[in-house]
Amino acid sequence: MAFTIGGYRVSTLVRRTVAEILEDNVLGLAAQTAYYFFFSLFPILLFITPLLGMIVDARAAIGWMEDQLGQTVPPETLQLLGGIIEDVVLADGAPGLASIGALLALWAGSNVFNTLAGALNQAYDVEEDRAWWKTRLISLAMVVLSALALGLGFVTLIAGRQIISFVSDLLRISSGAELAWTLVQYCVPVGLLILLAFLTLYLLPNIRQKKRRVLAGAVVTTGMWIGATLLFRLYVVNFGNYNQTYGTIGAVIVLLTWMYLSMLVVLIGGELTSELHKGTGAMWPHRGAVLNERIATGMG
Image 1 (cartoon, rainbow, N blue to C red):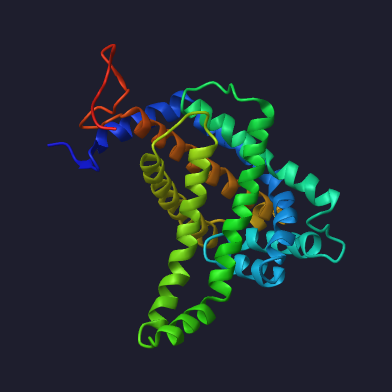
Image 2 (cartoon, rainbow, N blue to C red):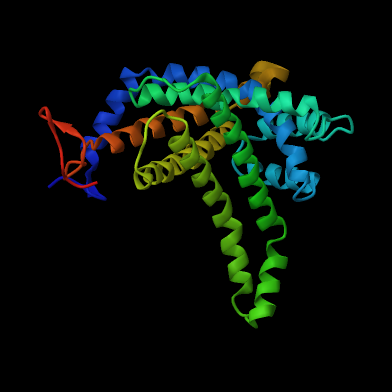
């Protein structure tokens, strides 16, 4: 009997997803997307930082982000990111949110999402027929939404204890406050990653999808990214000698490799979600799917 999850035959779904990964040259697309990711990362931070400063203290927010990255990202990468953030993003001369420099950074930062949209369209086997300004607006919106999601996470985590204490005092609940803080501390970052993955998979491809299938793909994508990042960190810390082999550019190589793995995971998640959308491996055909030249009228 075939192993199923949520009405899908896992073996069929995985087999077809792997075939599509090879057919669509996802390994090459991930390298292309990682290239834009590398050059867009710091412009994105340059725009996000003053936006976060309107909600919470920018240095506290960046410090929290570095602490969270420190649990997953290899030390060499964290050191490189920390130095650039301190010297460029948090410098006294860094542009404000309303400045031309920050707006140009926002435009440059949207390139990574614009490139992801093209790669995900290929995963879904659809053509991009939206106007160029519409796809660019979606990419710009993704940068802003990412900043807002991060800001919400910062507010929750930086002021989490105060919020929980306030609610506990208001409702006269005392016993579960510490447990609630612990749950928030771990659940909020994972929830934000799932939210960002959902927005990426739902908004960027030029196709209408069922939200529950995209959510399933986002959850799997987030799990794969966390696993891949932790395994890569484990390798770099215990087995990789990038600094000894490559010298001062070792941290850059580690950062690029991590970005490549991240983009690869996102595109694999896109391939998986596209197969869920097509009904691959479904025990009941999706309504509207074409099977044997007939339009299915099964489950939605």
